[in-house]
Image (tube, rainbow, N blue to C red; front, top):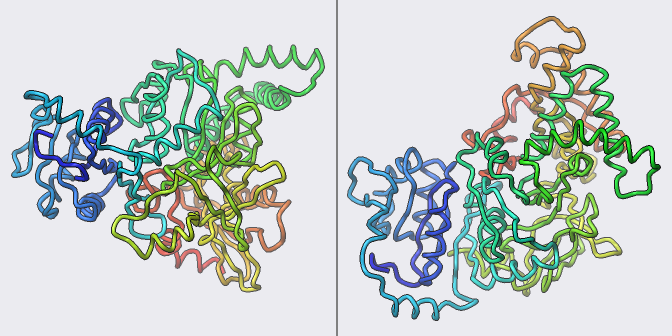
Length: 532
């Protein structure tokens, strides 16, 4: 308030997950201003685009490389008056120290007046979409949108006094901001902040969280690493692990006395050691941001780390549906939450209506009218509701492949089945207007090297193994096994291998690790076309 931020002014936050992120966000919201979160993984041109599009007046950043990127583009953003940084850096015209915001008398009466002026319809934040299909759009979320999400939580699961969360997904992402930011502070839950993305495993052991928020990609990677480590062990230990998973999958059902004893013994030997890596106290994991494969959900459930899967999108603040903790249905994203209606259009698209739906896209009237028709948000996702009201996501409407025979193929369904394979880390299906499907496969290096050692292949480095015919043929065989239940036109006929994972830096992943399918198709078109 002292530096001239008025109600409705946009203030950008560019920081890692640290307590100051939470403090600054609540400060901005408390005076009727609008928070514009930026991803630390943004390239300078991405930052400049959002700052200019949102008309940001003030930016607050932590320091280091992200602050340098921001300062490098600050002069290209005419409405940006100042950048507040938490550490001393080289001087710049717009550079200020964060401590300057904390000095001076507090205008208590002025603050109270600002607080009272904030209503449910007041714009709270502009959250820019990840941009899997084009330029990011600023989603306008009100205080009422956020409150509607919070109202729905107690019907899904209840907190206990000693619950703790570990915040490590980007707070710029609406899932993390709702689940590890607004939600815990509203319900009195403590939050620990991971030091860095590469210290999350260590920080889990230190913080011992009871609830963990994750995206499917992270869960897929963890599962692959566990299976890769198991593959390096003796045949006897591998057999014990398989028995443990099989028995774990049956827990909750009627099992024999002897099966129960064996499971408890194996759980002590195997399951507890795995759970200890997560801090040893997790009672629930929440997955959102993208569809989670049944295989991954079953794997974590079997090792004693149950996953509560939900569905949402930035435009819905984000919560649309969730599995209630006492009646989870694997393969579904649960039932619509309180006050939210879900309908399925004639073409299979999921439509949503309720107090969680955004006011629209910032400065994009045309796109807003296309997204919200007669009060219904058109999600762009294809799905179905079962007889019990549980929602299942089958694909993205715009991602549907139509082959040369006119048959529709849902690539996400196929990709979800394939990433359950321990030797596959990432996969992108291709085949629009083609006679059959092909795919780009990123193998899991650790699991593939363990497989090569087990098969007694000549000692070689990863680059040579990734280029070998024997690995390609093995992957093709395993792909066929995973897809054997699908129709003929949903089979992958040929594959190409990329040894290195697709990355955010290349512009091939969103900041939340979703694959930018169109970008991959464009960048590797020649290779993919060559498979025909």
